[in-house]
Length: 190
Image 1 (cartoon, rainbow, N blue to C red):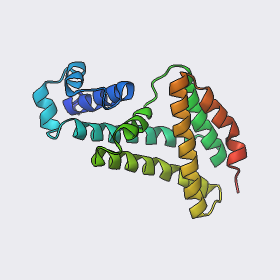
Image 2 (cartoon, helix red, strand yellow):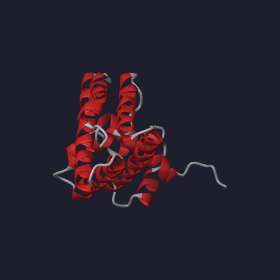
Image 3 (cartoon, rainbow, N blue to C red):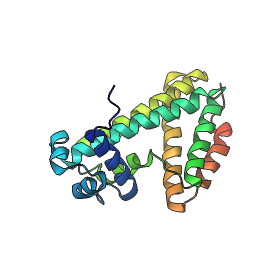
């Protein structure tokens, strides 16, 4: 098996990291080329449509990584309410310790590009829907009816996205800790 990192993967990982730090509009293709060390020709070989196509690949990559993290935390929880609380505490820990939160570029890119790039908006929407489907499943496990589980998944997602924005702005995990503390009173098992 070939363990060598593929140039396409390096480009996606580099773009993800730069978009997270500087946003979509703050990153140019030359920044990605310089940071990745991948030649410009290779970038256009893998992403002939340029920055927008690379951004979509970065969004999809981040979606997958975050879904794996959510599932890992949820699998370790004894019940759905504990799962939601553990996940938000994990987000709080990552933000509070100055860690490297991988999910933040989706909200940033969505805010920047929702009205100017339909392909990016759709990729962000699909990401959010996929994350919410995991939350919906946990609410269903707790005994909520399908419609209510879907609504509560949207509420939980809005809480976490808002908490992430506050944590970024305040440079502290405290907003997410506050959300985590309130989860048992907001989402009790049926």
